[in-house]
Image (tube, rainbow, N blue to C red; front, side, top):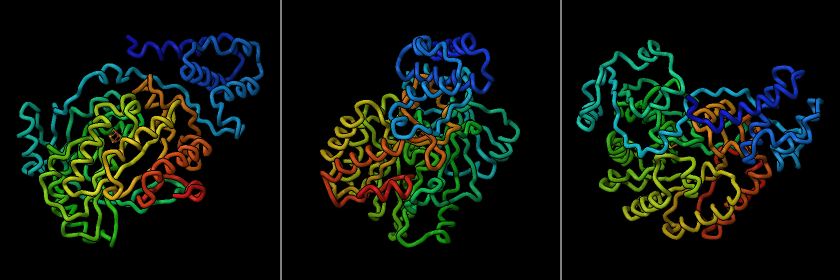
Length: 446
Ligand code: SF4
Protein backbone atom coordinates (compact mmCIF):
# COMPACT_ATOMS: atom_id res chain seq x y z
CA UNK A 1 0.00 0.00 0.00
CA UNK A 2 1.31 3.45 -0.89
CA UNK A 3 1.06 5.72 2.12
CA UNK A 4 1.97 8.86 0.19
CA UNK A 5 -0.32 8.38 -2.83
CA UNK A 6 -0.16 11.92 -4.16
CA UNK A 7 3.62 12.15 -4.40
CA UNK A 8 4.21 8.61 -5.61
CA UNK A 9 1.64 9.00 -8.38
CA UNK A 10 3.20 12.35 -9.34
CA UNK A 11 6.56 10.61 -9.65
CA UNK A 12 5.05 7.76 -11.68
CA UNK A 13 3.51 10.28 -14.11
CA UNK A 14 6.83 12.07 -14.54
CA UNK A 15 8.58 8.75 -15.17
CA UNK A 16 5.96 7.71 -17.73
CA UNK A 17 6.32 11.00 -19.64
CA UNK A 18 10.08 10.60 -19.90
CA UNK A 19 9.79 6.92 -20.84
CA UNK A 20 7.34 7.67 -23.64
CA UNK A 21 8.78 10.92 -24.99
CA UNK A 22 12.52 10.62 -24.48
CA UNK A 23 13.46 6.95 -24.83
CA UNK A 24 16.76 7.92 -26.46
CA UNK A 25 18.08 9.78 -23.37
CA UNK A 26 20.63 7.98 -21.21
CA UNK A 27 19.87 6.99 -17.60
CA UNK A 28 21.26 10.14 -15.99
CA UNK A 29 19.56 12.50 -18.43
CA UNK A 30 16.26 10.71 -17.93
CA UNK A 31 16.65 10.95 -14.19
CA UNK A 32 17.29 14.71 -14.31
CA UNK A 33 14.28 15.37 -16.54
CA UNK A 34 12.07 13.19 -14.29
CA UNK A 35 13.18 15.15 -11.26
CA UNK A 36 12.62 18.53 -12.90
CA UNK A 37 9.15 17.49 -14.06
CA UNK A 38 8.33 16.17 -10.59
CA UNK A 39 9.59 19.28 -8.78
CA UNK A 40 7.85 21.72 -11.15
CA UNK A 41 4.63 19.76 -10.84
CA UNK A 42 4.78 19.77 -7.03
CA UNK A 43 5.83 23.43 -6.77
CA UNK A 44 3.15 24.69 -9.16
CA UNK A 45 0.43 22.28 -8.01
CA UNK A 46 -0.18 20.93 -11.50
CA UNK A 47 0.11 17.51 -13.08
CA UNK A 48 3.45 16.59 -14.73
CA UNK A 49 1.63 16.00 -18.04
CA UNK A 50 0.58 19.66 -18.07
CA UNK A 51 4.16 20.91 -18.07
CA UNK A 52 5.57 19.77 -21.37
CA UNK A 53 2.76 20.64 -23.74
CA UNK A 54 4.86 22.77 -26.07
CA UNK A 55 8.20 21.15 -25.46
CA UNK A 56 7.13 17.55 -25.91
CA UNK A 57 8.63 17.46 -29.36
CA UNK A 58 11.94 18.81 -28.03
CA UNK A 59 14.41 16.04 -28.42
CA UNK A 60 17.40 18.25 -27.69
CA UNK A 61 18.30 17.40 -24.09
CA UNK A 62 20.20 20.61 -23.31
CA UNK A 63 17.46 22.82 -24.67
CA UNK A 64 14.80 20.86 -22.79
CA UNK A 65 16.77 21.00 -19.57
CA UNK A 66 17.30 24.76 -19.93
CA UNK A 67 13.56 25.33 -20.37
CA UNK A 68 12.76 23.22 -17.33
CA UNK A 69 15.45 24.86 -15.18
CA UNK A 70 14.12 28.30 -16.09
CA UNK A 71 10.71 27.22 -14.92
CA UNK A 72 11.92 25.42 -11.77
CA UNK A 73 14.22 28.27 -10.61
CA UNK A 74 12.65 31.42 -12.11
CA UNK A 75 14.21 33.97 -9.72
CA UNK A 76 17.68 32.48 -9.58
CA UNK A 77 17.79 31.86 -13.32
CA UNK A 78 17.26 35.55 -14.06
CA UNK A 79 20.44 36.43 -12.15
CA UNK A 80 22.63 33.49 -12.92
CA UNK A 81 21.82 31.14 -15.81
CA UNK A 82 24.63 28.73 -14.80
CA UNK A 83 22.79 27.40 -11.76
CA UNK A 84 24.41 24.98 -9.32
CA UNK A 85 21.46 22.64 -8.94
CA UNK A 86 21.16 19.37 -7.06
CA UNK A 87 18.89 16.93 -8.88
CA UNK A 88 19.46 13.51 -7.33
CA UNK A 89 17.77 10.29 -8.31
CA UNK A 90 14.58 9.65 -6.39
CA UNK A 91 14.88 7.21 -3.54
CA UNK A 92 11.33 6.92 -2.32
CA UNK A 93 10.93 4.30 0.36
CA UNK A 94 7.67 3.70 2.17
CA UNK A 95 8.55 5.54 5.40
CA UNK A 96 6.70 8.83 5.35
CA UNK A 97 5.47 10.36 8.57
CA UNK A 98 2.10 11.61 7.27
CA UNK A 99 -0.09 9.57 9.58
CA UNK A 100 2.14 10.00 12.65
CA UNK A 101 2.24 13.78 12.35
CA UNK A 102 -1.47 14.01 13.09
CA UNK A 103 -1.00 12.43 16.51
CA UNK A 104 -0.44 14.51 19.59
CA UNK A 105 2.71 12.73 20.66
CA UNK A 106 3.62 12.57 24.32
CA UNK A 107 7.06 11.32 25.15
CA UNK A 108 6.94 7.91 26.80
CA UNK A 109 9.75 5.56 25.71
CA UNK A 110 8.85 1.91 25.27
CA UNK A 111 12.42 0.73 25.64
CA UNK A 112 15.26 2.16 27.71
CA UNK A 113 18.74 0.68 27.27
CA UNK A 114 21.18 1.50 30.04
CA UNK A 115 24.91 0.99 29.76
CA UNK A 116 26.22 -1.28 32.49
CA UNK A 117 28.61 1.37 33.87
CA UNK A 118 25.75 3.83 34.56
CA UNK A 119 23.09 1.34 35.62
CA UNK A 120 22.89 2.91 39.09
CA UNK A 121 23.15 6.53 37.94
CA UNK A 122 20.68 9.18 39.02
CA UNK A 123 19.46 9.54 35.43
CA UNK A 124 18.72 5.79 35.12
CA UNK A 125 16.89 5.85 38.45
CA UNK A 126 14.85 8.90 37.40
CA UNK A 127 13.82 7.26 34.13
CA UNK A 128 12.71 4.11 35.99
CA UNK A 129 10.55 6.30 38.21
CA UNK A 130 9.07 8.38 35.39
CA UNK A 131 8.42 5.53 32.95
CA UNK A 132 7.45 2.44 34.97
CA UNK A 133 5.77 0.80 31.97
CA UNK A 134 8.90 1.03 29.79
CA UNK A 135 11.06 -2.03 29.22
CA UNK A 136 14.52 -1.44 30.76
CA UNK A 137 17.51 -3.42 29.55
CA UNK A 138 21.13 -3.33 30.58
CA UNK A 139 23.66 -3.30 27.72
CA UNK A 140 27.43 -3.45 27.71
CA UNK A 141 27.74 -0.27 25.64
CA UNK A 142 25.83 1.75 23.06
CA UNK A 143 28.64 1.24 20.53
CA UNK A 144 28.51 -2.55 20.91
CA UNK A 145 24.71 -2.41 20.56
CA UNK A 146 25.01 -0.38 17.38
CA UNK A 147 27.58 -2.68 15.83
CA UNK A 148 25.39 -5.71 16.57
CA UNK A 149 22.16 -4.10 15.31
CA UNK A 150 23.48 -2.07 12.42
CA UNK A 151 20.61 -2.30 9.94
CA UNK A 152 18.85 0.90 10.91
CA UNK A 153 17.18 3.11 8.38
CA UNK A 154 14.52 5.74 8.01
CA UNK A 155 11.82 3.42 9.42
CA UNK A 156 13.78 2.95 12.67
CA UNK A 157 14.67 6.64 12.79
CA UNK A 158 10.98 7.55 12.59
CA UNK A 159 10.42 5.62 15.82
CA UNK A 160 13.43 6.95 17.68
CA UNK A 161 11.27 8.63 20.36
CA UNK A 162 10.33 5.14 21.56
CA UNK A 163 13.89 4.25 22.51
CA UNK A 164 16.32 5.87 24.93
CA UNK A 165 19.96 4.96 25.51
CA UNK A 166 21.39 6.09 28.85
CA UNK A 167 25.14 6.08 28.36
CA UNK A 168 28.50 7.10 29.80
CA UNK A 169 30.19 9.69 27.61
CA UNK A 170 33.94 9.19 27.73
CA UNK A 171 35.50 11.53 25.18
CA UNK A 172 33.22 13.81 23.26
CA UNK A 173 32.36 16.37 25.93
CA UNK A 174 32.81 19.71 24.15
CA UNK A 175 33.66 21.10 20.77
CA UNK A 176 33.81 24.34 18.88
CA UNK A 177 30.73 24.85 16.73
CA UNK A 178 31.76 23.45 13.34
CA UNK A 179 29.90 26.28 11.58
CA UNK A 180 30.23 25.74 7.84
CA UNK A 181 32.95 25.89 5.20
CA UNK A 182 34.06 29.47 4.33
CA UNK A 183 31.61 31.03 6.79
CA UNK A 184 32.33 33.73 9.30
CA UNK A 185 32.26 31.81 12.62
CA UNK A 186 30.69 33.32 15.74
CA UNK A 187 32.96 31.46 18.20
CA UNK A 188 30.24 29.34 19.77
CA UNK A 189 31.09 26.20 21.74
CA UNK A 190 28.99 23.09 22.17
CA UNK A 191 28.35 21.05 25.27
CA UNK A 192 27.47 17.61 23.82
CA UNK A 193 24.75 16.79 26.29
CA UNK A 194 22.55 14.36 24.43
CA UNK A 195 21.88 13.31 20.88
CA UNK A 196 18.51 13.06 19.18
CA UNK A 197 15.28 14.94 19.53
CA UNK A 198 11.62 14.17 20.21
CA UNK A 199 10.38 16.83 17.79
CA UNK A 200 10.01 16.43 14.05
CA UNK A 201 11.27 19.41 12.08
CA UNK A 202 11.18 18.90 8.32
CA UNK A 203 14.55 20.59 7.95
CA UNK A 204 16.33 18.98 10.92
CA UNK A 205 19.86 17.95 10.02
CA UNK A 206 19.77 15.15 12.59
CA UNK A 207 17.75 13.19 10.01
CA UNK A 208 21.06 12.47 8.33
CA UNK A 209 21.89 10.24 11.28
CA UNK A 210 19.38 7.53 10.48
CA UNK A 211 21.82 5.02 11.94
CA UNK A 212 20.93 6.17 15.45
CA UNK A 213 17.65 4.52 16.47
CA UNK A 214 16.97 6.36 19.71
CA UNK A 215 17.63 9.32 21.95
CA UNK A 216 21.06 9.17 23.62
CA UNK A 217 21.43 10.73 27.04
CA UNK A 218 24.68 10.80 29.02
CA UNK A 219 24.33 9.92 32.71
CA UNK A 220 27.76 11.23 33.73
CA UNK A 221 27.23 14.99 33.54
CA UNK A 222 29.76 15.28 36.39
CA UNK A 223 32.52 14.18 33.98
CA UNK A 224 31.51 16.99 31.61
CA UNK A 225 31.95 19.43 34.46
CA UNK A 226 35.35 17.96 35.39
CA UNK A 227 36.50 18.28 31.77
CA UNK A 228 35.23 21.84 31.50
CA UNK A 229 37.98 23.43 33.58
CA UNK A 230 40.59 22.42 31.01
CA UNK A 231 38.35 23.56 28.15
CA UNK A 232 36.97 26.90 29.25
CA UNK A 233 38.03 30.29 27.91
CA UNK A 234 37.26 33.72 29.32
CA UNK A 235 34.06 35.16 27.94
CA UNK A 236 33.12 32.05 25.98
CA UNK A 237 29.57 31.25 24.89
CA UNK A 238 28.61 27.64 25.19
CA UNK A 239 25.31 25.83 24.72
CA UNK A 240 23.82 22.36 24.57
CA UNK A 241 21.38 22.65 21.69
CA UNK A 242 23.45 21.31 18.80
CA UNK A 243 22.43 17.66 18.58
CA UNK A 244 19.23 17.89 20.55
CA UNK A 245 16.77 20.45 21.89
CA UNK A 246 18.31 21.76 25.15
CA UNK A 247 15.13 21.63 27.21
CA UNK A 248 12.55 19.36 25.53
CA UNK A 249 13.39 16.46 27.87
CA UNK A 250 14.45 18.54 30.86
CA UNK A 251 11.59 17.53 33.14
CA UNK A 252 12.96 13.96 32.96
CA UNK A 253 16.71 14.52 32.64
CA UNK A 254 16.94 17.45 35.07
CA UNK A 255 20.13 18.54 33.26
CA UNK A 256 19.26 22.23 33.56
CA UNK A 257 19.36 22.12 37.36
CA UNK A 258 22.91 20.79 37.37
CA UNK A 259 24.07 23.08 34.57
CA UNK A 260 22.76 26.25 36.18
CA UNK A 261 24.31 25.25 39.47
CA UNK A 262 27.67 24.44 37.82
CA UNK A 263 27.87 27.68 35.85
CA UNK A 264 27.42 29.71 39.02
CA UNK A 265 31.11 28.93 39.54
CA UNK A 266 31.95 30.27 36.06
CA UNK A 267 30.40 33.74 35.88
CA UNK A 268 32.77 34.69 33.05
CA UNK A 269 31.15 32.05 30.80
CA UNK A 270 27.69 32.37 29.26
CA UNK A 271 25.67 29.18 28.96
CA UNK A 272 22.75 29.03 26.54
CA UNK A 273 19.76 26.70 26.45
CA UNK A 274 18.27 26.60 22.93
CA UNK A 275 14.76 25.25 22.59
CA UNK A 276 11.45 25.04 20.79
CA UNK A 277 9.80 23.81 23.98
CA UNK A 278 8.24 25.43 27.03
CA UNK A 279 9.98 23.11 29.49
CA UNK A 280 11.13 25.87 31.83
CA UNK A 281 9.82 24.64 35.20
CA UNK A 282 13.29 23.63 36.41
CA UNK A 283 14.68 27.01 35.31
CA UNK A 284 12.01 28.91 37.20
CA UNK A 285 12.66 27.10 40.46
CA UNK A 286 16.46 27.48 40.39
CA UNK A 287 18.65 30.39 41.46
CA UNK A 288 21.07 31.38 38.71
CA UNK A 289 24.09 33.65 38.50
CA UNK A 290 22.90 35.83 35.61
CA UNK A 291 25.12 34.08 33.06
CA UNK A 292 22.41 31.81 31.66
CA UNK A 293 20.63 32.71 28.42
CA UNK A 294 17.43 30.90 27.51
CA UNK A 295 16.82 31.04 23.77
CA UNK A 296 13.97 30.16 21.48
CA UNK A 297 14.01 29.42 17.81
CA UNK A 298 11.21 31.48 16.28
CA UNK A 299 9.18 31.20 13.11
CA UNK A 300 5.76 32.42 12.03
CA UNK A 301 3.06 30.04 13.30
CA UNK A 302 2.24 28.92 9.74
CA UNK A 303 5.86 27.77 9.32
CA UNK A 304 5.76 26.02 12.72
CA UNK A 305 2.53 24.23 11.73
CA UNK A 306 4.04 22.93 8.51
CA UNK A 307 7.58 22.22 9.66
CA UNK A 308 8.12 21.94 13.40
CA UNK A 309 5.83 19.11 14.43
CA UNK A 310 5.20 18.37 18.13
CA UNK A 311 7.10 21.51 19.25
CA UNK A 312 5.45 24.37 21.15
CA UNK A 313 3.49 27.06 19.37
CA UNK A 314 4.89 30.54 18.80
CA UNK A 315 2.56 31.98 21.42
CA UNK A 316 3.69 29.39 23.98
CA UNK A 317 7.37 30.03 23.23
CA UNK A 318 6.98 33.79 23.66
CA UNK A 319 4.98 33.35 26.87
CA UNK A 320 7.72 31.05 28.24
CA UNK A 321 10.36 33.65 27.30
CA UNK A 322 8.42 36.27 29.23
CA UNK A 323 8.36 34.06 32.32
CA UNK A 324 12.11 33.55 32.07
CA UNK A 325 12.65 37.30 31.86
CA UNK A 326 10.49 37.73 34.96
CA UNK A 327 12.74 35.17 36.68
CA UNK A 328 15.80 37.32 35.86
CA UNK A 329 17.16 35.37 32.88
CA UNK A 330 18.38 37.02 29.72
CA UNK A 331 16.71 35.56 26.68
CA UNK A 332 17.88 35.00 23.13
CA UNK A 333 16.04 34.42 19.88
CA UNK A 334 17.08 32.57 16.77
CA UNK A 335 15.30 33.37 13.54
CA UNK A 336 16.79 30.20 12.25
CA UNK A 337 16.00 28.68 9.88
CA UNK A 338 14.23 31.55 8.16
CA UNK A 339 11.98 29.96 5.55
CA UNK A 340 11.30 31.80 2.31
CA UNK A 341 7.71 31.47 1.14
CA UNK A 342 5.09 33.52 -0.62
CA UNK A 343 4.11 36.14 1.98
CA UNK A 344 7.31 35.73 4.04
CA UNK A 345 7.64 39.47 4.62
CA UNK A 346 4.32 39.90 6.36
CA UNK A 347 4.81 36.60 8.23
CA UNK A 348 8.16 37.67 9.67
CA UNK A 349 7.08 41.30 10.22
CA UNK A 350 4.19 40.05 12.33
CA UNK A 351 6.52 37.71 14.22
CA UNK A 352 8.99 40.50 15.04
CA UNK A 353 6.12 42.69 16.20
CA UNK A 354 4.82 39.87 18.43
CA UNK A 355 8.30 39.36 19.90
CA UNK A 356 8.80 43.01 20.87
CA UNK A 357 5.24 43.32 22.12
CA UNK A 358 6.14 40.91 24.93
CA UNK A 359 9.90 41.24 25.45
CA UNK A 360 11.88 44.42 26.01
CA UNK A 361 15.12 44.86 24.03
CA UNK A 362 17.14 45.26 27.24
CA UNK A 363 16.28 41.67 28.24
CA UNK A 364 17.49 40.21 24.94
CA UNK A 365 21.05 38.86 24.97
CA UNK A 366 21.21 38.29 21.22
CA UNK A 367 19.25 37.52 18.10
CA UNK A 368 20.63 35.35 15.33
CA UNK A 369 19.51 35.15 11.72
CA UNK A 370 20.06 32.22 9.40
CA UNK A 371 18.17 31.24 6.29
CA UNK A 372 17.38 27.59 5.55
CA UNK A 373 20.40 25.52 4.54
CA UNK A 374 21.28 21.86 4.68
CA UNK A 375 23.63 19.31 3.20
CA UNK A 376 22.36 18.06 -0.17
CA UNK A 377 22.17 14.48 1.13
CA UNK A 378 19.29 15.57 3.35
CA UNK A 379 17.05 16.35 0.39
CA UNK A 380 16.06 12.75 -0.31
CA UNK A 381 15.63 12.05 3.41
CA UNK A 382 13.20 14.98 3.68
CA UNK A 383 11.34 13.72 0.60
CA UNK A 384 10.97 10.32 2.20
CA UNK A 385 9.96 11.45 5.64
CA UNK A 386 7.86 14.46 4.63
CA UNK A 387 6.74 13.77 1.04
CA UNK A 388 4.34 16.69 1.04
CA UNK A 389 6.74 19.23 2.54
CA UNK A 390 6.81 22.70 1.04
CA UNK A 391 10.33 23.74 1.98
CA UNK A 392 11.88 21.89 -0.96
CA UNK A 393 9.59 23.65 -3.43
CA UNK A 394 11.53 26.91 -3.08
CA UNK A 395 14.66 27.73 -5.07
CA UNK A 396 17.40 25.91 -3.17
CA UNK A 397 20.75 25.79 -4.94
CA UNK A 398 24.22 24.58 -4.01
CA UNK A 399 25.78 27.55 -2.23
CA UNK A 400 29.29 28.70 -1.40
CA UNK A 401 29.74 25.83 1.08
CA UNK A 402 28.07 23.22 -1.13
CA UNK A 403 24.96 23.25 1.05
CA UNK A 404 21.53 23.81 -0.42
CA UNK A 405 20.53 27.42 0.20
CA UNK A 406 18.48 30.21 -1.31
CA UNK A 407 20.33 32.37 -3.83
CA UNK A 408 22.56 35.22 -2.62
CA UNK A 409 19.97 37.71 -3.80
CA UNK A 410 17.12 36.11 -1.86
CA UNK A 411 19.23 35.73 1.27
CA UNK A 412 20.43 39.32 1.08
CA UNK A 413 16.85 40.52 0.68
CA UNK A 414 15.65 38.43 3.63
CA UNK A 415 18.47 39.52 5.95
CA UNK A 416 18.14 43.21 5.02
CA UNK A 417 14.44 43.08 5.73
CA UNK A 418 14.82 41.28 9.06
CA UNK A 419 17.68 43.52 10.25
CA UNK A 420 15.80 46.67 9.40
CA UNK A 421 12.62 45.38 11.12
CA UNK A 422 14.55 44.44 14.29
CA UNK A 423 16.54 47.69 14.29
CA UNK A 424 13.21 49.50 14.17
CA UNK A 425 12.82 48.34 17.78
CA UNK A 426 16.40 48.61 18.98
CA UNK A 427 19.83 49.58 17.68
CA UNK A 428 21.58 47.96 20.61
CA UNK A 429 20.56 44.30 20.43
CA UNK A 430 23.43 42.03 19.43
CA UNK A 431 22.55 40.65 16.01
CA UNK A 432 24.55 38.04 14.17
CA UNK A 433 24.28 35.86 11.10
CA UNK A 434 24.53 32.11 11.52
CA UNK A 435 26.49 30.09 8.94
CA UNK A 436 26.85 32.88 6.43
CA UNK A 437 29.90 33.85 4.43
CA UNK A 438 32.04 36.92 4.96
CA UNK A 439 30.77 38.50 1.75
CA UNK A 440 27.16 38.43 2.97
CA UNK A 441 28.19 39.72 6.37
CA UNK A 442 30.20 42.53 4.76
CA UNK A 443 27.28 43.65 2.63
CA UNK A 444 24.85 43.91 5.51
CA UNK A 445 24.99 46.48 8.26
CA UNK A 446 24.48 44.55 11.43
S1 SF4 B 1 13.93 20.97 17.55
FE1 SF4 B 1 15.95 21.09 16.60
S2 SF4 B 1 16.91 19.10 17.05
FE2 SF4 B 1 14.70 18.89 17.36
S3 SF4 B 1 13.86 18.12 15.45
FE3 SF4 B 1 13.70 20.35 15.41
S4 SF4 B 1 15.58 21.07 14.40
FE4 SF4 B 1 15.91 18.93 15.04
